[in-house]
Length: 145
Image (tube, rainbow, N blue to C red):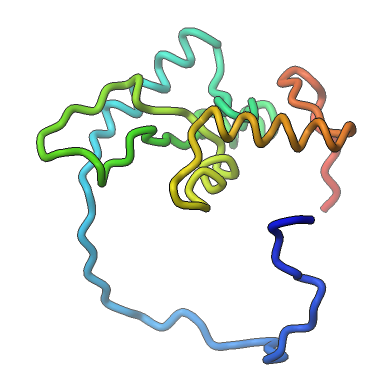
């Protein structure tokens, strides 16, 4: 598929194992977020829809994972925090509730995809793969472990 790395090739290094878990001390600058905005976005979605679903693909963690998935959804800032001037206000309407996969796709390229671009990408992919469905009420396929 276009845009995907070729994972079918043997890795040149032939790596099979490596030690991991070394302790590192790292210093980062981080932009502060107000968790109350996220809580309010979730509260409004629950009041409006009765559930938390991805605003792009309609994935519902609670439906797929039961109690273990209840309340799980990521919150995406549609106005990148690094573009805000000091003291500039973020509104609940600046947030989008996304599943982890959609959130990762949004941030996978620069500039970030907009919510509409992400929805268009999903619709385009679904159109080429008729076995896929975005029907939030459809029964999820069985999982084989």
